[in-house]
Length: 455
Image (tube, rainbow, N blue to C red; front, side, top):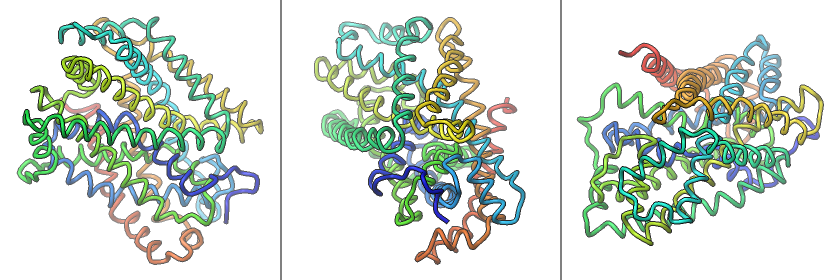
């Protein structure tokens, strides 16, 4: 069964791929991946990460696309309810969409805050504000900025407005148009920065250290913590579990292959993370910097490295934060879309009105993260929302969707959506029944334990 008549659809597979990749590729690919790899053994972490993408994330992606396209609505909750009813099971399985949609909505409320920091840094590099600053002064600039809510507020409001505006324009004139323009530019900038980082740091040893760190396997560093971290990063990086891909799947024409699309999106997101590592780590090692320090790497360490390069560094810094802005806007649009689709169908209103209602709520709740900052740059409110959504809600939603598709969804629905690819449908069932639930369950238990119970 195709999506309900009248539901907007992607104009082409390319448009869908760009939008889906834009959803998956975000700030996490640029700094969270590098931080996690830096803290968890480099190549050992990456090896498990790659396995997790193939064995867990791609099957979850296929599951979400399948449920979305087979449903009667762009609303993820109703899509899961419909699939459950047609499978002869309780529609209460729609809890997976509820959890994912709420998680995605809460994430975008603080995502706009981080994106506001990025926007400010684009301007700071364009204005050459860091020229002549010491490393301590560069770091102090970041702490001072995020500790002053009234300075962050205009940038937050601007980014929230842009996100809402793009969603209000609908699938083809908003999300699709932005993705088709921004993502190719993103890829060009990313590859350019990676090539520069590799070539410019050959002589000082930064390139050699980066390549060894990323790609020389050291199996002795593989342990339970590294495996859990790699599984978690793969899960969150690809963007599954937030109801986005169920909604995006509802816009997917029947002519587009779900397995091929999931593989392309999953592997492209992985390639972006690896290329980002090639852009970041040569600079980090060439300057004798610590690779595993999270947001500090992004907003303190790298700006210091760029500043030390003089005028070339100013250009590179502006380009790098432009890159981050492109990644942020495509992700924020996708995070708001499921909520807007839900409001549209529940209130029976236009997409534009629904987007502004959802966007208004996003902006109001986002103020909690803007103003929830203690002296010294302690973003306690943002961190609390990030921890609960990322380490509890997303893996829980992912676990529920693979259990639903693997054990409760009518096989006839899978066969219909995988027409012509029956063998792949059987592989999906195998992975969603036995492989993915185990690994997603490990991510969920490990994440909850580390977030709330570990020493």
